[in-house]
Structure formats: structure tokens, C-alpha cells
Image (cartoon, rainbow, N blue to C red):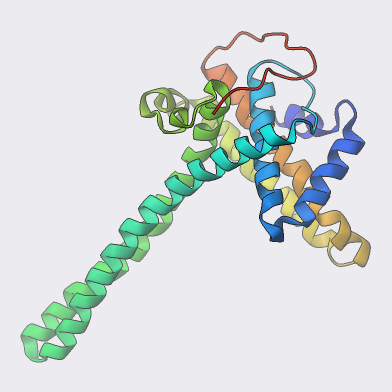
Length: 238
């Protein structure tokens, strides 16, 4: 799976594809290129799940934009919901801590101690919760890529089998390895002026490989029979 993922971005007419992806990555500060990149990564998931061996091309930019916006919404909802809940709890516990300090005495100290313990527990819990979110989002995007509707990204029943599968767990670990390796290579390259220019292209290559690995795991878990769509999968609707 790792070898397939790493070789995947360089298949076919890869030079033009990497150039476009790297240029978009270099201008993500303007936000709109982010949506095109996300849309392309969703298309990578689509192609992979449908059994297409070569990466998709950058075409039908309107479709890429729509897919990218939907992917952004899915990832944002999964991230913001726990963040909002933790934020509300933090404010409540901070209020308890402050109230305890204002009351004073033994009762106030106990009240403040309760608030402080709650805050510490909340902070300790936040990291593992966000790790769960990071584990869940790729599966949600893959399910969206497969079914073409935003609701598929939140279909718990459909997501459960892949989230609990060994294939997907391994794919996520490989994705982490690829992402870390890509970041390290980009960081080393950034030590030179030429390397700084190359960094967005390295990150794009790594991200395409990551979504390839996730797509392969999704197809394996659901035992999806490859369908020949030619050069690219049939676009799906939102």
C-alpha cells in the first residue's frame, strides 16, 4: 500500500499535474486555491475507489470547486463541533475558578480547585478527541467521494465499518508517515531559495499519495469491484 501510494502521483502525465497542484499550493494564502486542492483530493479518492490506476487530471474546475467546498464543510463541522463544546466547557470551568477566588476562604478554595481540576482534565482530553477527529475525517471524505452527497460524510452507519477496520487504521498510519516525510523533505528543501519554491510541490505530491492510500483502504474494506471509467471517474453530484 505504501509503495503504491508513493508511486501513484508520478503516474501518467505527472509533470503538468504536479505543476498545477504546486502552484495552487503556493497560493493557498488566498483561500480559493485551497478549495480547488481539496476538490482534487476528493477526485483522487473517487478515482481510487472506482479502480482507476492513474491520478485524475485538473479539469472541470467548477466541479473541483464544488467538491472542495463540500470537503471543507465536512472537515470543518467535524472539527468545530468538539472545539465549540470544549470552548463552552472551558468558559464554564473558568467561571467556576474565578468565582472560587472571589468567594475566598476554604469554601472558595474548594470551589476554585474544582474549576482548576476541570480545566486540566478538559485540556488533557482535548488532544485525544482531536486525534479521533483527525482519524475520522479522511473516512468521511472517502464516503462523500464514493456517494457524492454531503450527507454521506456524516453517515455514521456507513462510516463505522471502515473506522473499525484494520485496513483503514494501517492506511491512516501510512498517511501520517507520508505526511511527516513530506514535511521533513519540504523543511530541508526550504533551507535554500530553490527549496522554498519546491516546498508546495512536495506537499502536493505527499497529499495526493495520502488520499490514494485512504482510497485504497476504503475500497478494500467495502470490497468494491473496480469499474473501468477510462481516464477518470464519472463526476458525482453534491
